[in-house]
Image (cartoon, rainbow, N blue to C red; front, top):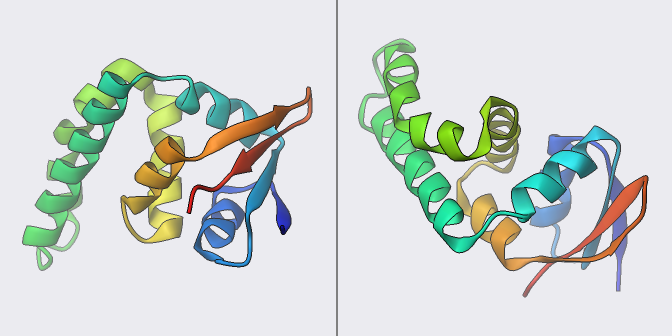
Length: 127
């Protein structure tokens, strides 16, 4: 069992991609954001995943717009902002960008927090 300590979205995404890592110790302000996201129910996860899927589809279907499609995709995230707030949606956007796909949302939903301290949380990946 391998554990990696992370404090940024980029480090977390790398750890989630690494098949040799079983557990991720999340520290710093990222820990609080992670716990808030993980505390949501199935309906919220569905809304969030759907919002990001639509936003991603808008961006992917218009790759030659010079950034206009990114701006046009923002309204698709409104439901996610409504249930999570802008801070957590921005956190998820950073995770998705660092990971390279919205597949990170599934991994977040399926994994479990096995230990929590005032300074860190241990996230166990599901295989």
